[in-house]
Length: 154
Image 1: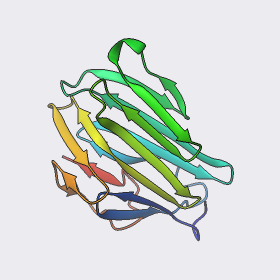
Image 2: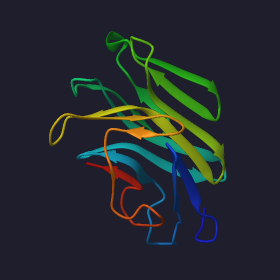
Image 3: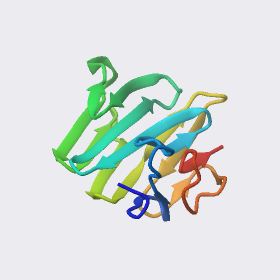
């Protein structure tokens, strides 16, 4: 990924690109944030993608984390991880609801969807399908390389 080859993130019916400016933009960046919670961070490179995620339940209780594609998800909370192929990561809760879906479409494109929750500063929720975002408005300039979270909701 370089300045001439931006990464495109698709969420709901929206898209935003992120360019990497050498020595300025971090390799991994927050792609989705709700309230004070960075929920999904992405890094793309010639050998694939690295994903970080913070998972919360409907009450805002932490359910698990993903760091550099490594899962820390206690068996007691009923989450299941479906890594059906090397390009798709899906996490379901005990009710089989899709909490997180990240698909690495190609070296320059990701799709994110799921049911996201954040306990801070107040309990908030956001539902994202392939076509829509239900819950909050996108904050800030999300039309291009904005230097913060690509999709920030409040």
